Image (cartoon, rainbow, N blue to C red; front, side, top):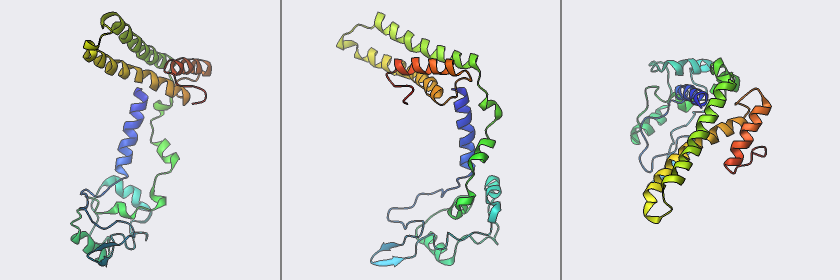
Length: 214
């Protein structure tokens, strides 16, 4: 679980650095962004995005410039006069990158090997002891709350608040079991396939979800 959150957090930071978007939402009826014209009052107006498929002056250095989040210089013309008029008319405010995201090309997106290269090496290492510890803790918490509810909460309608609280707690702990089982299916639990499939099969079956077909 810790590894999963670590990878997610790092990838989230990486993704945010690659996705400079418009900081303010467009008002209702605003024109579309890419190559679509808006019609208001029977008059067709130029849409923001005319010529956006052309390569900008950033060229191949786009990835590096995005990471710095530095504002463009005056010599970098990102919008034609028509596009600038649409921005003003629709009251569209740009982020600090001044609309660079509108000129992203397919080759500007990171490749899979580049994403993998940014994941720390320790996130790829599988520790059987740590993995089993997470599995045991999640299972113990799930079974333990179930036993406590069975022993101390009567099966009566008047105790529904207690059962609701139990359902929330037990469901949260059981989610830990599901995450462990799910990682077994993704071959991320252990290098020992027998151990991995055994843990995954037992937890999946307990949660009434098939393991191997999943």
